[in-house]
Length: 118
Image (cartoon, rainbow, N blue to C red; front, top):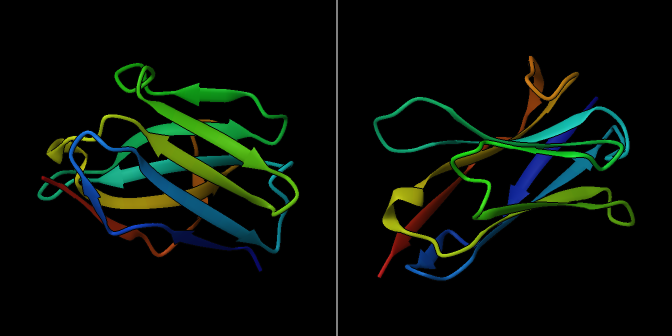
């Protein structure tokens, strides 16, 4: 069974880099499509970006200049980095697996709360 587990700091200071990792079990990071999705307080889910098993990356255009998604084949995981974090980046962050860059998402991590504050 596929399982995803997010990890990373729960509190990030404004202007610093927000970094999260999603560890995969039951599948390979070199297969399928692996996405980062977030939910700000009081808002709906927001797709941030996807990395394909091939390593090709797709980003939400509104975030493209601020985010990176990194594939780590040795650890079978993928990571998210958001530079110059602001309080608007406060959200629950999820990693998910899909069969395409647009979903549907078959497997989700439990989510991790990240708060950006000065």
